[in-house]
Length: 437
Image (cartoon, rainbow, N blue to C red; front, side, top):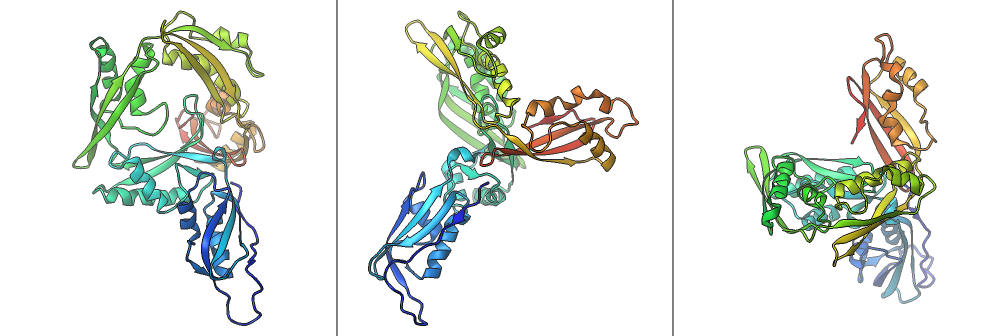
């Protein structure tokens, strides 16, 4: 994370007499240059200065530091514009950190709180919070406590945790996900309005897919809504969606459940008219076509579309493009119910390994592992290499005489989009097949 820098400020209201008394000023107006996505009210709340505030040079310096300490602003400076000391304009020069250099925050299963209530609770701790945080932010643990407090006000005694997740094909961004670990609500029932009779079997698949399972409203591609819509979208209803979603949570002892209600909109079944990809430096058009699961004339299945895009997505991730976004832009012909897909790719930045930390093994096993492990600090980050490491190095687990015999590992990749680096933490457990989440 790039550190905020506090710039020198200048008081321009006139010459301050060289006397022991500290000069005071009264703010008539507070200005913020380049406020970015933040409102005047948010920025004034952080600075602690408003029209009418009386302040000294030290107070202005402290306000500047408070803005810098948020972590949301790359550079912060302040000055006063010429005017009367009793009615002076304070101008803060700020440079908001771009969204693409921050981490998206989602909330998996806070069924007792609306999004507005969640945002209000977190903005009380960090007024500039709007579903994104700076990389390596000290706010993450603070937010755990704030969410626990917000749930307590609803009568829910909760344990809240958070974790980071690598981008996926369906969710091409690094995500910090907060969840209620205890009590973790499960879907007790679904009430879907607007279901056509002929789609009742597909809706039953939806019921089976999400009923009794943990509720998730956060991670794209894995949400309860995704589970509800998946059978319908795989049947070619590419515009299928839910509206008027509502949640009715309840507690029975320490067990939490939620009833999900919504209205289903299906649209029409679409077939594929064409699938076009011009090719890229890492995967040619012919290579892409050779593995495509979706073809002209076939039903526009969501799953088949994702399977078609996977080889292209994987080709870029192997080369460290952690934020790669593979898109299949649809062009629908509503008269014939056909859809033409044009595939494009936005690679994003290429990430490199910053650190590798090993947990759960002794010094001998660590030496053995480091001798075989080829993805060192400074190298291009390749998640596929991690996922297949032991499969490619079977000799490490082949005999009981080797220090790594019987071990597998799970891993977490902590990516910083501000520096395009990844900190890897590998945790070894006997009998564990390597995996990550």
